[in-house]
Length: 620
Image (cartoon, rainbow, N blue to C red; front, side, top):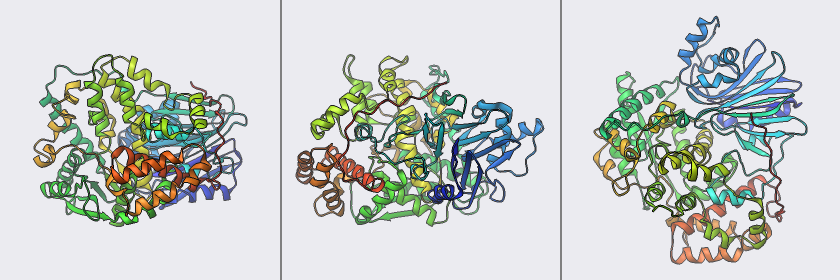
């Protein structure tokens, strides 16, 4: 696991490259390496997980140089195949096979990888070109800036590091606020910075002097033509899923560094914990698997610590109860915003950041989590509501509104006339393909929804958050539910094996967990793993005082996009009738202003509300 960065057709000096590397030191404190030439550079900060004595990056083989962030889980099979083709390897690190793999398969090399990764290759064998690839689910982000007129290309694993390049400026996308409030963080390749993009999941990008930037989308794991297996019963699906997850969890426990598990107390992480504890015992590991849960000082709604402790007792782990004081949240928010690089409207960001800091403080560099199960196996209430909506209704618009930080009716009230005009002129905040997929793609309504969740929401809103906030503490997160084999299996489930309105969600996953997870966890009502911000954002709490200060009338008036009187009305309503909708709106607006303060020295200056020109991207 690492942080990577680089340039193409750019003259960077050592001072600039060192500055970029230093901005991601937290994600790779074990070693740093760089290949620097007059018009290109590839750099790496390493968090050593596999073969700590080997794996020095950048990797070189002839005129091919590679840097890599992530884990390649099938590297042993690939090493054996490549050895048979005449290649020789001096270590056993997973990434060391990448130059040979690229030389063998060219731009299609990523099709042979099983893992989580972002990779950059500099190929000087003929016409110089840089090749970048991301994994099937988008677990390891890669941000880039491409200047079409000059042909200059910069990339980095994190936004603050990308902004460390002299040729990349921090300019706010004025329409980004609307995109953020519409989907809690920008979807697709969009970021909150003008001219800066993120590579989508499952793509291969090629940069060259001749062709500029070409981006080719590979089929994601759920897009590989798989169809529901209608001859399989729910019990059979549950058994097959349990066996599959057991194999993948066992593979993900392999590391040359201490491994732990995160146990929230819900179904997904509890099943991963149970399977990991069993695999840990059977592999002969010393002692017991360590598990971590986070809770908050005091008494708050939706406290899951009792469920997590029961899971730990049931499967025999050594459990760590992490507790954080909500009074410290205002101090944490700046750190969280800085590491994310752009606002994410989920209050769980504070908990995630604190949890992984505690995991690393306890001596662990790797953690297994239950993230992504809801997207694959249909665990969200918005999915049930969309499936149950009557034919001909505006179910797609209602579903999309559930993704928002601020529902569209409230956004309409919040925006100033000038900003509302600019938003309407700029066009939809969501990628056009989302509505087309929901309304016109083949397959059932539920399959179309899960396709949108996996291509757009999961990587942008969920996986980038987990990556940035875990690597902020030098912790590698491994996600069994994002393994390609699990994603492909989920695509073979029938709708009724995912959810049936009135009868339950994630039905195949619940069957897989029977006998492994305590009944109290299986039978408890579903609740989101999040911060109880509705209760915490109340008069007398530090979070309330911070929100009042950050969203001061003079600040909002200077910004020019949000009506101060409407925000004041939200505060009044939250003080008298607290609600999830109002509290999330206030939280989201506060997070956005904190992001502006962190990344723009003149964050209190008026925003120029010009409609941005469309950014053109050359596609293969």
